[in-house]
Length: 364
Image 1 (cartoon, one colour):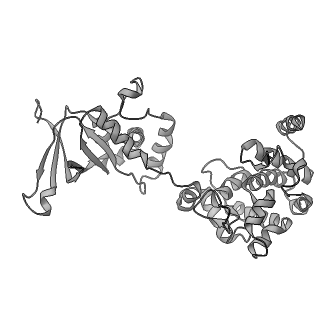
Image 2 (cartoon, helix red, strand yellow):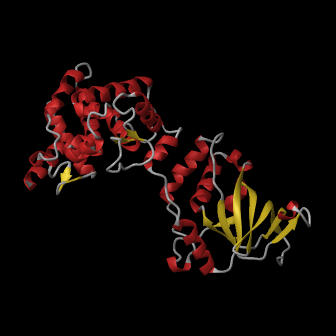
Image 3 (cartoon, helix red, strand yellow):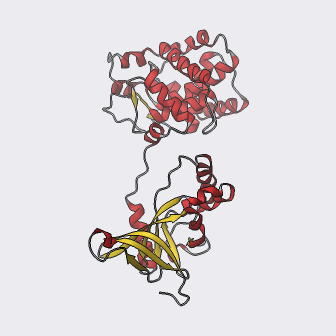
């Protein structure tokens, strides 16, 4: 077992993958930072079994644990043990033969293959909320077979991992006020109702949708000038709904798309307003409009009806919403498109916007 005879012991289940035993144990959160190590940053990549720790991610993850101490969820960590382990089953035969106590020598090196950022966030969260240390987190233990095997485990664990789209994350995130607002508008605002792609963050050519949930979320942050995860009041929610419905009154194609009088594919092919760059730009210009004309913004907004949104209007959109005839999602393109809208609304440009417009004009 070990020269000292001292061990970490956990209730565990034994399983088998590729002819090798592995164990699933319930570990108290408070012991995670003490027994799990990760490769130090100064170790060269070829001698590590993990990526370098991105410390910028830690405060957000730790904050999630602290702020949601009664509803957080942590997925299992995966670790390799570089020593022989001992498994004592509860019974010698039957189902209970794979249930028992897993003992790991205290002088063993336990290396995290997947979950190093969760481990670091746990360590940080325990400093301010030690009470979560009584909770448990599942850990998959594999018996280490050297650096090459550990590196292969890391590659295998991450090779087929696919992050959910931003729209799907927005759909399922019930903690974020911005996500809540986007879902509310998709379900209650006549402009977005039935025309919002709820799962994907890009729209295929054949899709009957016109907007993505993620683009609505981003646009609302610009419209209401909200920081990430900043709260949204009921008045702001209603204002956003009112604003987008007023915009739709001035872009008849949006209404026609909902009524199936025109295909969304044709709109995407022919018009700037059928793309996310226009939605973001309308939000940026709308924020300035609401701030400068809080009581008369609806009448002023009518001026956008005169904008020629056609992609064939190269003189207006090339170098702004389009680059070489293709729609651009770049932040500069959004800003330049917002300038076009603000000028149509008769709004003053900021100094930064004047400089950006001058640079763009000089390129023509």
